[in-house]
Image (tube, rainbow over all chains, first blue to last red; front, top):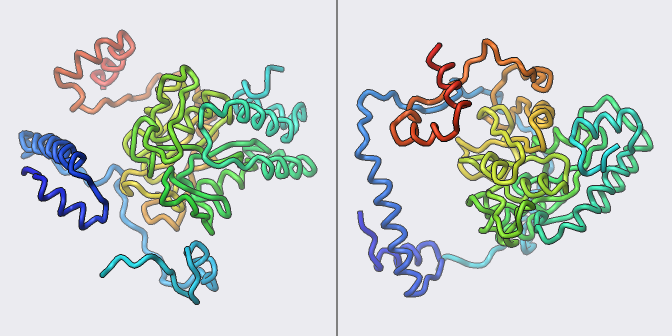
Length: 95
Length: 290
C-alpha cells in the first residue's frame, strides 16, 4: 500500500486537520514507512501459533440491567462549552 | 531522621503512625520541594492549598489504621479527579473538569492519601519521551538535557525529584516501565484487569492498565495493595483474591519460576541478553530447569 499526496489531502479534509504542502509530503513519507513496517509482519509464519486474544482467561461478567445513576443531568452538561437548555452546544462541523 | 522528601513511603507511613511526623509537615515538605523544582515541569495542575487543608484536617483526627495515612501524592493527569481539571496532557481537555472520580484514585483517597496535584504526561499518553504534552516537555531530574521517558514522564520525574513520595501512572505499551527505567525509579505494570480502568482517559482499552511508581520495590507493593480492587464499573476488571503484596516480599526466590517468552530467545535478542551478564544467564537456567 502506498500513500500519495492526494490521499493525504483527502484524509486531512475528512479529519478537518489542515496540512500544508510541505508537511503533507513529509507525512506521506512517514505513513509509507509505517505501512512498510506493518507489511513486514506478513513475512512471519504463524500457521502453528495459537491466537492470543487475552492474557487473562476470563469471561465478561453479566449484571442486572438497572439504573444506578439518577438525577445527574446537571453533572453531564457541566462541561458543555455553551448552555442551551439541556443540550451540548458545539461549533457547527457538518455543512 | 533524614530529610522528609528523601524518605520512602514505608518510612513516612511509619513516622506518621509513630507520631514523629504530622501529615501537615510531610505535605508542606513536598510542596516546598515541588515549588523549588518548577523547571522540571512535572506538574500540569497544582492543588497545594487544598492539600494543606486536607492534611490539617487529617492531623486533627488521624486515622492511623489506614495504609496511606495523610500521605501527600501527585497523580498522572490521565486519571479523572472530581472537580479538579484533568487534561491528559492535551489542549483539547484544557478546560475539562470531571464530575466523577476514577476508581484507582478513589481507592488512594480512601486509604488516607492527599492529592498534591496532577502530573504531566504525553498527550493522551501517546508518546515515550514526554515531549508531546501540550503543557511542554518534562525534564529528567538526573540531567536537565535528558527526557524522563513517557508517557508517565511527569510521574517518573516527580518521584525521582522527590516532589511526591509515590505516584501512579498508566501503562499501555511501556508508559510506566520505560520512564521508571529512565529516571532510576521503580514502576510496575500490573496484570491486566487487576486495577480498574474506570475514570482513566483511554488509549488502547484492551492494554491500558494503571500501576504504581515509587522509589523502591516495597513502596510499589504497598501502593499496589491499595489501587488493585475488583470494580464492577470496569467490565474487564478481574474478580480474584488480592494478596498483601508487601508481605510477600522476601529475599528468597527458591521455588519461584521466572518466565521469559520464547520469542525473546531468537538470535538477535540472545546477543543483547548476554550483555546483561550473569544475572540473565541464571534466569535462563531457571527457565530451562523447569
